[in-house]
Image 1 (tube, rainbow, N blue to C red):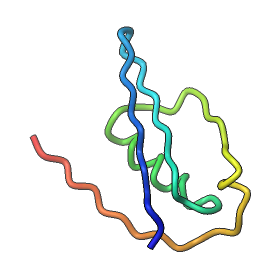
Image 2: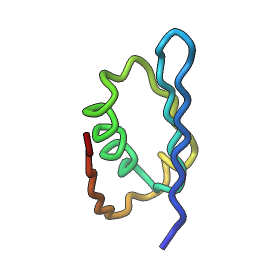
Image 3: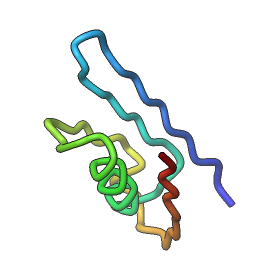
Length: 66
């Protein structure tokens, strides 16, 4: 299984940046949608070379604890 990495940066003004690595094709967009539910609406995006590779099937689970 490929290694997945998530780099999350929260800036002083509250802006959140998310950098996702290890997903092939458009499967990363499903992960980004899950993060959007947690931190808020996507303002902009920049696609990497991995986005343009053939898609892969990805399953994920998000547990949110209070």
